[in-house]
Length: 71
Length: 141
Image 1 (cartoon, rainbow over the protein chains, first blue to last red):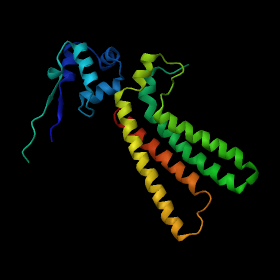
Image 2 (cartoon, each protein chain N blue to C red; image 1 turned 60 degrees about the vertical axis):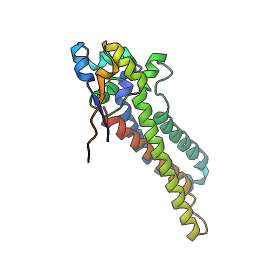
Image 3 (cartoon, helix red, strand yellow; image 1 turned 180 degrees about the vertical axis):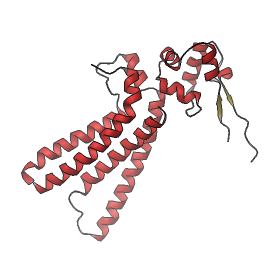
């Protein structure tokens, strides 16, 4: 099964932002940022674009698909 | 002092859990008294209906909407919460379905169901839905 791999935590740390600060920039709760970073929750396209814009990155830099396993 | 959007968001799971437990206790008392003390039945029934409605609104509504700005309401009801609400709705619907199937099967073997069956089943569905939502909210906190 293909899973979404999140690099959000790395990009947020490089931007010097806390989860709360990033949450306020994109208009969601800190909990939502935490679940996206921990790959518990897959964000919508809209939120992904907002996160990318807030961190000066592209959506592809923040997220990627893991390679599906053969078995 | 009104709660901030972020505080509502982080405490929503715990408050929902507490309300679900209180709802169970109150429903037991209200349903029992409504049939034991006939004169008070309308008052208990009304209080029970209000409490159940508040519990469901707390799960599927936007807590604190009256004092929150539009942006804060979006934070309180962001896409993670909406995903949890969708899962809770699916779970609640399944509970309601099985409760009705069970009540129907029971009805086949007994001419009449006990009069408390419907309010008890409603309480069960509301409380289980609230507990399911609370678990999701607290797990991701």
